[in-house]
Amino acid sequence: MASGERTFTEDARRAQIIDCAIRALATLGYRQASMAKIAQLAKITPGLISYHFGGKGELIDAVVAHVVKLATDLMVPRITAQKTASEALRVYFETNLEFMRLHREPLLALVEIITHDRDGPYAKQQEIALTDIEKVLAWGQHTGEFRKFPLRPMAIAIRGAVDAVPGHLLNDPELDLHALAAELAVTFSLATRSTP
Image (cartoon, rainbow, N blue to C red; front, side, top):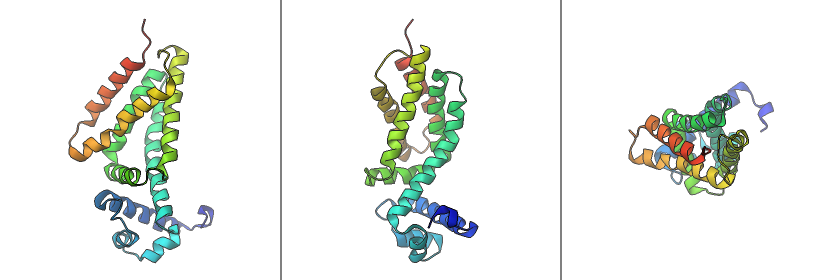
């Protein structure tokens, strides 16, 4: 069903199902988050999920889109508001880890999806994330804030540092994300800056 054809009630039901799918993925894991379990959490029938999403694959796609939107809505305005590439890179780390702090359950659901469906809907988002980092890095090189280096390897290193955090959060829910964001910002400031 196309989004333009949905009613307010149908949109609300879809949002409820996505929220329940996130909870199931985060608490039960990818393999155990069946349509039946998600329906049980939503207090609806599995058939109603199929009506709104067609199947688990479409529902997983919708979960990824929802979590990515949560992240980009938090991060993008703050990153793009910065006056320098150095500040944008610092805010990139701060907002990524702030998203992890504020949206723990959606983060865990996304980790489950990525872990169990590597070629699934998040693969395209990963490429977008790397390209966005490359834009910040190219900006900094253009202004002379950053030294000359190949963009893709540095973008992979930056994204890899961010992607390592959820695994540590699973083992240490009290991990100081503010301190970690600050340290990552300093580390990559040193790694990217132009030398006088």
